[in-house]
Structures are given as structure tokens and as C-alpha cells.
Length: 272
Image (cartoon, rainbow, N blue to C red; front, side, top):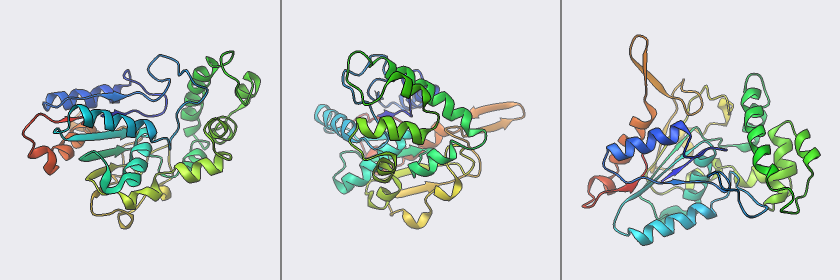
């Protein structure tokens, strides 16, 4: 199962690549669209956020009920990776999956919001905020929202958006309360299923000091922090002038090496 990043969908190239890699491995693959990201507007005033693990928990239970004997792995990108790590920490040994992989995670949301308001990273911030505004604009006229269209248009940073939109829509006492409770870094020590965490030191979405170190990771977690890779990038150059994605290969290699997958007598149900 794949969890996409902020405002991602099945159309996101990284989603298509990893699902294709899973299928080539002989595995089944599915994507969980976060609320409102599938092209169909969410029917409630609330939306999704970086700490919302309830939908993931529900879908894992559904898949476990349908295929109880098949190993299940979950791969999360960026915001989806934060959700995954938080959920794995919350569940501990009771998690109904056999493996996980989290890529380019904003481990500390406050630090990520600050980093995205600096230098060239503001380009990413502006693009993502514009997409979020379009999604929210559909809700006006159908729901009583704690802000107006004018106020929404005036929000220029993620901290402003989360303080004025994300927090009140999802029961948090402002952006700082949301960041403190939803950040995944604090949940990593509680993870008990094999999990790969892959993050580049040059990720423009997070300062390097906010990346966890090996001492924070339990024995179940493999932390890989290459110097380069950007945000959900990670390509390699096999020949001069040619590039190919390396990320998907590493993910399926990791999942395929987990004992639950190598010893499975039936095809695995997972996303690589």
C-alpha cells in the first residue's frame, strides 16, 4: 500500500513508479488517497493532515480482513511517510503490517514549515499552498468553515495555513499544537516492525538538524541518510548522460528482504 505526499494522487510519478516496481516483483499494489486527493471532493469540512492515522488504520484492517495470510507492506512519501511512521509508532508490535518504508519525511513539522519559508524552498511552498487553496475552495457554500475566501487567499506560509486552516478544522489548538502532536520523529523509537527510513541531507523540505540519528532508531528501523537525493528524488547515473530512478529499487529490495515476504507461500500484497 502506498501513501502519497501532500496533494499527491495516483497521477504522481513517484506513485506510479513504485507501484510498477511492486507489480514487476509479482506483488499486488494499492494506493490510499488522502481525503479529497482522488479527484472527488471530500464530503466533510475536515480534510487530511500529517498526523491523521485513522484512515490508514482503517484501510490496513480492511486489507487484513480480505487477505489475512498475505504479508502487507506500506510505503509512505513525504507527508504520507510522516503518517506512516507515526502510525507504526502508535501501533508498536500490534501493527497489522509486516514492513514499512518512509521516504523524505518531514520528521519535525515546525522545522519543515520554517525551512519551506526560506530561500528557493519558497517555490515549493507557494506551489503546494496554491493546490491546497484550490481544494479548499470547493468546500465554500457547502460547509461552515472557520475562515473566509479572502482570509484563505492571504495565507502565504505553511505556518499561517496550518494555524488558520489545518488546526481549527482538525481539533488542534493552533499550528504549534498541531506540529507538536503530529510530528513523527517522537514515534520512531516505538516502531517494532521492519521499517526503512530514507532521507537525503539536501532535502529542501527539512533542515538537516531535524533528521533523526541512528541512536533514535530501534533495532527494527533501518535509517539511510545519503548526502544527496533531494525530496523524493534519489536517481543514479549508470552511464554518462543517462539517469534512472534508484529509489524504487531500494524500496522493493528492502521489502523483499523482510522474512515475512521471503517466506510467504502466497503472493505478497504490498507496495514497493
